[in-house]
Length: 173
Length: 173
Image (cartoon, rainbow over all chains, first blue to last red; front, side, top):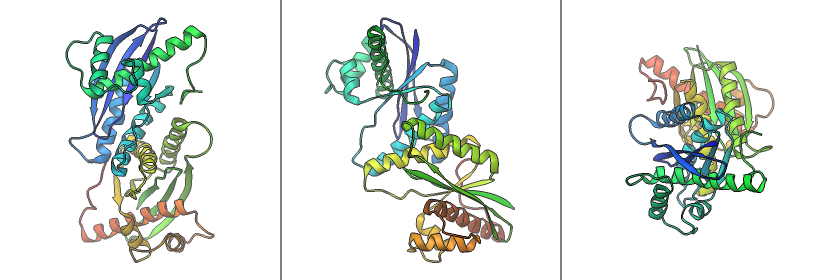
């Protein structure tokens, strides 16, 4: 059994999703929540809330591995900068705890969760809910965070079945 | 007397400069160094080195306040994202220590150091060396980091003379 933390960093809010996966690849929902970057306070204060919020979640749920979506490349440099700052703070919280980070492209995640790389957000939200037996509509950031965690869970289970390692991970060597 | 840490975050390397300033605004060089983001290891590993490197510098030199250059807006989203990630990790190291952060635009820094907002990099490097009595040629990132620290030292001394606070700072409330 392994616990996987999925992170979907955004310039306005960061989605966080945690699942457990067993050796067969079966996944169980543990937790999900958004971490807001908007709202009260100046920019550094908000970045601090993201950093400490994520550190507290790691402390509470003690994930074994982390999965994060590869960056969706914005055409707007201002958005890219804001997203980069949020991503830098989120990765900071993870590497401070020495957790290995695995990165997946959006198309890989859609393929793993919906079965087709061109799936839309609504399909991802729906399938994440079905796969994790969740009632009600998932918020999009939480669905994306759970989706990248599910993707890593599947890649991980397949790698274990085949007796090979998962792709090169960041972080712990 | 106050110790000021200046940071010039970059996608490839981050300049760090530390000066002391007394009540009259007189500045004394304490330390400068680059923190490399390039080189060995994967992306998260490099971001971790930046985060821990800056945390170690803060631990060793114990600055009272931090000054950081406002972002130079790139036209390239990919560069903006990388710069944002480095900036997010650098700010993470600072806010973890609860240090107040002051932000200055490039034109304000050039005005404070060279006397004209349109000064070029070479002039900034030269004037920082003169103002801090440094021998030899300063590396550009270190010069920029020391320049933003000098800018804050001057703004701070002027504000103290006038009996007013410096501009709204991030961080500590």
